Amino acid sequence: LAAAQSAKRGNRTLLLERNNKLGKKLYITGKGRCNVTNACDITEFMDNVPRNNKFLYSAINAFGPKDLCALIEENGVELKTERGKRVFPVSDKASDITKALEAYMTKCGVEVRLNTQVDEILTEGNAVAGVRCGGEIIPCRSVVIATGGLSYPLTGSTGDGLSFAQKLGHKVTETRPALVPLNAEEDW
Image (cartoon, rainbow, N blue to C red; front, side, top):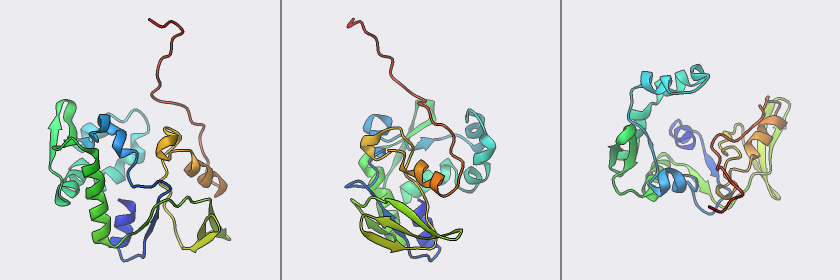
């Protein structure tokens, strides 16, 4: 969505994806069905953010759950709401959500490069100057780091974004698991 919005505003936009396909993490959400969002109003949404909900206030008011649903449906995917106000594609296929987002990016003019790992964000002074991907340097004036955290390395969430942010001088808080399995020694 960030890439599409950038391109929509007239910026030449390149999305670099380390995986061989887009939306790898979406494929595992909602048990493969992709829990897109929740069909609740903004007040209810904010009331269910466990801490520091003020951080999301301007973003969620600018583009809330209803806006996301409209965008997905405008790009060819019918949605349904299930118990707990959870929103899924009618097809129950996460791949349909990925295809809708790809279609939106294409309409907006985003260039996508798959199998491209960013190794470093380059700066000159206090400004972004480019990114290094292997031996290639791609010049740019700005970047959006949207790498995910450390939650699922097989989907590409390896902590690279945290490392980039820290190297650029941002404060990075200590991470810890939020949802974890309970493992017991007993086999019963």
